[in-house]
Structures are given as structure tokens and as C-alpha cells.
Image 1 (cartoon, one colour):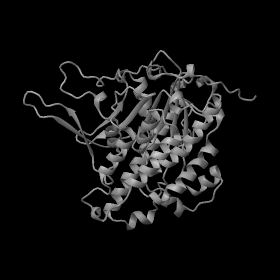
Image 2 (tube, one colour):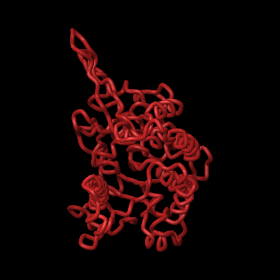
Image 3 (tube, one colour):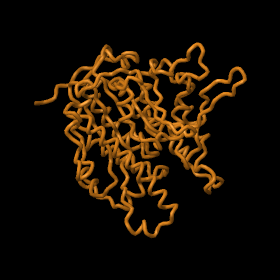
Image 4 (cartoon, helix red, strand yellow):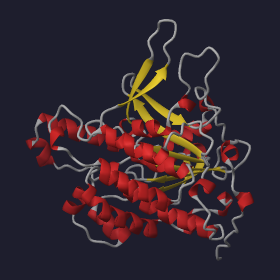
Length: 398
């Protein structure tokens, strides 16, 4: 049976309050992974999602992803993209900002070689993000939809999921509050904190408490949300919107909540037995940290597949398969996951391209501007091959 496309009308477009209102459903979440300049892959896939959904809603040129999704979540490079999309930008507009930012920020200075300084200067990131987001704060009135940004507060070791939800516990300042309300945080600074990858960039210091009655102001030092368990923020987004403490209060159910998760490319975790035997302790430490981050990513994907019904579910491993059926026999949500696996066999089977393992290993780098054109091409190809109109059921149409 052919799909009947709807006609998108201005009246169908939810305003910011309606996007967050738990009484208005169903709800749709877009979740964007971290991964440095590999975010170009994300944008390629998002271009196809935007095109598919625009056609589904009458091919109206005014259609934006912020019309469809009620919350857009991002970690690290995903936070940059999420911030732009939540303000009503098209994918092409975000792509333009992203390309300029990537080429400007990731320029290595000879003065920064060595182990005692971060690899890239943070002031370039601040300048670029301020150029995109201006002086907006999390409580600014021109957000088109919900936004969630994941960061890690290094000085306390806690994960900070920051949102523009006015009902969140710390979003507004009480009459006796000494803390600075989350809503007052500059958007560029929140995104910069989420992108402050250790070794690559210095932490971002955010003032979170005012000095009063002789007390000193309180600062928090924030680093990339990718060093929390939520480099893929899909599970955090699901928790934030459905757990009572976060004060979203959204309903669950496969017809009530859709989570669309987009990755930046899954690296090949295999390092080889010989490399482990011959490597130095420092190399072992780096490989172990990389493996831990991959484990977190697989864990999030496993949990999301276990809590949902998903036509895109992949085999996690040979023992648990796709983690189906849903936990308790009842799905909390519908779930779509789109990502690229940097494995030669996967490229051949899914994208129809033969690319050597050596070439793919080079493309895994998160800070190589020379990789941008090829990553851009791969992202667009992956979007065309992986994203299907049938994945987006009429239940979630506007």
C-alpha cells in the first residue's frame, strides 16, 4: 500500500511551549552523538531525515526538524548541531556553520605541541560558537523546540544534562538562591562546555554560584559530555523526559514517544593481539579508555533497543542479538538508530563501497579537517542508504 503524504500547515507547527507540554503528544526526540569533526557524518544523515520528513509533510520549504522534534539532544559535536537545529535552522544552515567552525578551530599551532597543553586553543571555539549563537541564554525566547546538552562537571565528577525546560528544578532562581539559575547560562558556553574534549581543549569554567555575605563565587569546570556514559545522549534524553525528577513528564509507549538517534560513525574497536603485547603502558591506557567509551556507546544502544520497538535494531553481539523483545514485554518508545560502522565489511554490505581498513582507520580521527569532504560524502551516502520513509510511522506525523 503506498504511503499517503500529509499536508504541512502552519497550524500544525507546535510552538516552544507546546513542544514541551506533556499533555500534547505524541512526542519525538532527536539525539545526536559526539565525535569531533565526524559530526559531518551526522549532518549527512540528518539531511536525508529532513528531506524525508519534509516530503512526508507536503514538501513545504518552511518545514524544519524543529517542527517535527519536541526535543533535540546533543553531546559534544552533537551539541553544536542540536543547538542550531533547536533555533529553527535547516540542516544546510547548520552544515554551513559547522564547516566554517571545523576548519577554523582545528588548526594546530606549533606553540601547542607537547603533553602539557591542550592540542587546540579554546578561544577559537568560544569565538566561533558566539558567532553562531550570539548572546542567547538557555531561557531565551527564540528557541523553536526543546534542547538538551550533555556535559561533565570535572571538579565534582557529575554528569550535567542541561535543558531549556522552564520547569526544570534549577532552571529558575528562587528569591533566596545563591546559585545562578541554569536558564541564565549562555547557550554558547553550555555548548562549549559539552565540546571541551580532554587533551584537545581546555575545560570550560562556568560560574554557577554568586558570592554573597563574604562567600566566594562558585565556579564549575566542565568537559566534554563524551567522557560521561552519554556520548550517545539517547538514553539520557529518554530519562530526562520521562523520569519525574527532570520535570518533563512525558508519556511512554511505542505510540507515544519516538527517539531518533544519529551517530558520528562507530570506530573499529579491534587493536590486535600483537599491538597489545608490543605497546607501552601509556598506549595500553589510551586503548583502554577508547574501549571504555565504545563499551558505553554499546551499552546505551543495547538499553535503547531493550526498551523499545525498533525497525533499525542491529545485532549488539552474537550472544544477545538485538536485545529484543522489549523489557517487560512493553516498549517504552519507538526507536530509530542511524550510524556508520568503520568496518570494511559493513561498508561493502550496507553502502555498496569497498574501502580499505587503513583508509577507514584514518577517517576515524576526530580532528582532521582534511577528512571533512570524504566524511561529508559518506554521511550523505549513508543517509540515502539507511533512512527509509517507512521507518517514520504515520502515528508520529504532524
